[in-house]
Length: 159
Image (cartoon, rainbow, N blue to C red; front, side, top):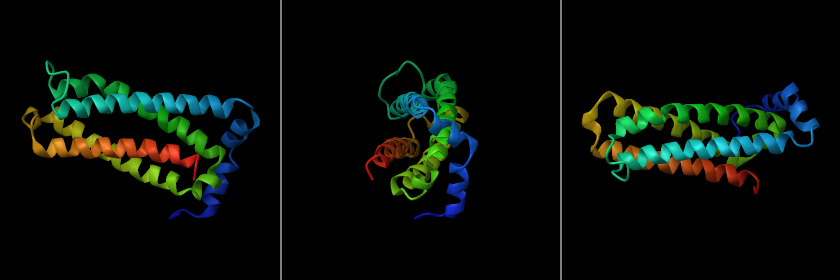
């Protein structure tokens, strides 16, 4: 399932970022903790928006209002997840390049971000989508994708 050449992964693992992370005893653990905490915030905000789309909770606000309110937290935590994930990747790129759970995680992550962008655009551009079956299906798929990213991330340690 590896789409990129091994030289790409070797290049990342030989980078200065990898050297810094791998030479200090606690850097990897600290960065991984920040990565997991940021991902938890990301999942939480997306979970809240999608549950609102599905009609659960926060009924005093529209789905669009909830999405707009949580948008900075969602994108800020996604940015932090991407940065810390890139650093963690660099520290063991060759191993991760051969890891099917990691490759699945990256593929599903791309799909999850794309679906989230579509949902947010629909919600914030047109209030008429509030009860739409399409947006509810997209919310369910979004939740499935994001929790699949988390599971694939967890599987990296075991496979």
